[in-house]
Length: 324
Image (cartoon, rainbow, N blue to C red; front, side):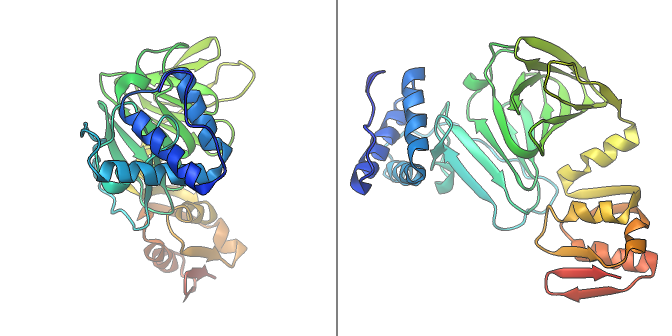
């Protein structure tokens, strides 16, 4: 397949399967040049069914051992106990690839879509870094260093944060991330990058992170919190105390560290990690404050602790925990 060739788009199911098979074979021969990569992305975006067809084609291709095994994207288990129902879809060149669904290696320059639902955060070993993906979060992660080389405006985007929150512990090799139109590069640093709305928030625990926004480059240093905004203005550094850093980073281990925190604010943290809902039926109780360390995966234990601490009533009904 040359740079100006590629499977022609078609809405027929058999043609879609054939196109997906050709793209799977083409990806196996090596990285796509930019024009061909753009056509592949357009093909995926033309019809949502194309993604499923490509996943199935790639799975069949690998199951028949048509490809040579490469270095996998290793997983580093965290201390938090992982819940069931996690999803991981492998994609090629900014779309999907089925290698991980079969627990097979990820070929170089492929892109892995990592996604977490309402479950425990998960740690992944990537390059020299440790990446922690929070619940209700998603990110594209390159399998090789090709998409992560360099720094500044001409650098690869590296990990692309789509939603939620990602924790990064970078070693000597530079790690690149993108979120909300901003690029970040760092080495020997520890930080969280959250994209809960259109604009990201960066919590820098240690080290320096290079922020690139168009032609502007700014060094963000930790410990500090940065709320990024459009318009070209450099983000202001908000102080982050050692106690504050401990509380901010606790999510990586599915923990909530509370220090005189309003109960309503504390309860909101648990909804991210479980389908069990804690409800507060009294405004007075909602304004009460709580201190302590709690497991975010165990909302019932937290509710019972609040019941004992505040002397209130607790009603358990299915997936509802009602404090009154």
